[in-house]
Image (tube, rainbow, N blue to C red; front, side, top):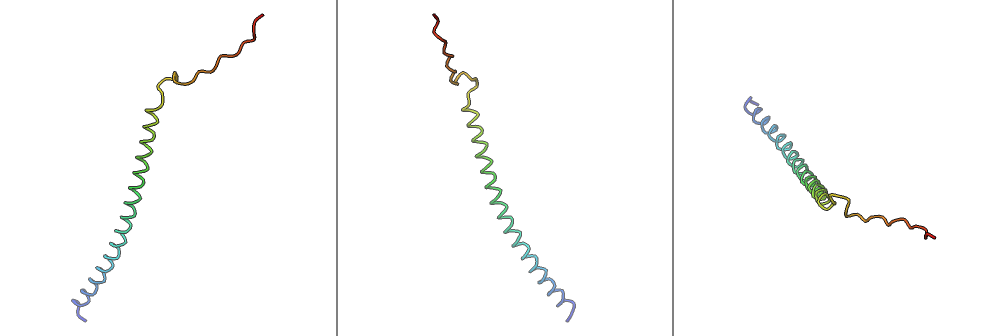
Length: 76
């Protein structure tokens, strides 16, 4: 076999290995993208929940129910 034939065969083998690695990389990139989108959605929901609770919480404790005054014993 000539050097050219060996080079072509080696090139095809390297190309096949490259495509196998690229396919795996694309699969992992897709998985990581899906996980990233889910994490971003969860973080967004958490921030929205925190923001909504912060807006709903009263600025001063005046909205809270005041405790009933202590009952006094009847004076004689």
